[in-house]
Every structure is written in C-alpha cells, then in structure tokens.
Image 1 (cartoon, helix red, strand yellow):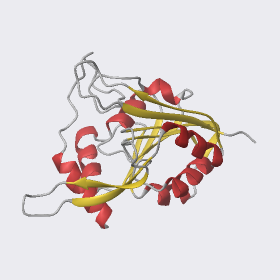
Image 2: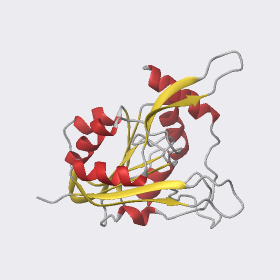
Image 3: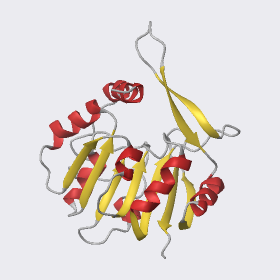
Image 4: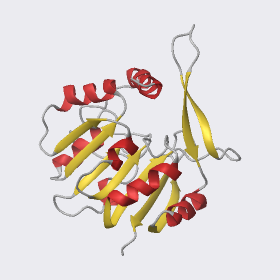
Length: 225
C-alpha cells in the first residue's frame, strides 16, 4: 500500500459515517458540498437513462450508490482500501455499482467503455495533478460527456500544488498529501486547454448561519470531433 493510500485510510477513520437518511427521508442522495442537505444534486451530471458514470475518489460510496439507485451504471475508484471496505459493508451488492481499489489515473489509462460523465466530490480531481488527470479523463468521456467536480475554493494567493495535512495521534506528525488549488477562471482556461468546452466554475456560498467557506463547483463537457 502506498503512502497516499495510508494517508486516505487515516482520513477515512476520522470521518463520520453518512447519515441513514437525509432531511427529506431519503436513504441515498447526492451531495456536492461539505454541508448537509445543501446545494444541487445529480442533475449537474446531465446523465442519460442508464448512463455510465465514473466517481473519481469515491470514498465510502454514498454518491455512487445514489446514482446506481437511479438506474445508472456507477463506477467508483479510490486508493483507500479502508474507504472501499466501508462502502462494501454498508451498501453490499447494490445493482449497478462497481468499485475498484486503484489510482484514478491508472484506472483511466486502462481499456474499457467510455463514460457519459465523470465527477469528483472533494476527491481525486483535487488531489491529482490536473496536467496528468484531465487529459485521461477527456479520453474516457464520450463526446459531450460531462466532467463536474467540487472542492474548497482556493485561499487567496495560494495557487497550484499545495500541502494538505491529515492529523494523526498527538505524538505523531500529520500526514501530508498534495492538492491543486486554482481560481475559477484558471480552471476554465485549463479545461479548455485539455479539450473541454462550455466550462464554468462558480463558488456556491455556504448555507446561512454556517461557516463562510463556500464550495467551488466546476463543470465542463468533453469536446466533440
């Protein structure tokens, strides 16, 4: 297991489980933000009926399971075996759900059917060099297929590759993973450079009465021939 996988295993053990139901009483749902019951849902992916969709950094599988419940062919990839084990324990053999223990780029570089959409919710798009990831995402999307990802907005003046710290025990140094932060306009430009069109990047404000940190949501389509 790589150091990166160990880091995300550590992170996984610190995170609370997804609630049994949301505020609407649903057992599965899609959430782009760090806040409960906030923001848009799966409609951002603009999936066709029974569409094929890829979760880049699926974690414990909650978003992918929701898409499978809608009749999609949902594929999730993650480097953390602890996260994937938790997904299996909670969701079992959900029809239409397929999970892989692998790095996002390694999976995308393999042979396989194209996808109608790919997405990342505080996932692999945030923690992978976009110069390496975006071209292979584009190659595995059908023409016109959607790429949508969400993450924290960048801290002003701190752009490009940054250090993200995962705490451990009090007597241990935190684990460090790399993340890539850019202003919305830079993401739009970068996506255009790698063969995406109709790109837009916006910051969704936090819910009223909550912390002021919003959520950066970036959307684009794979260009057509």
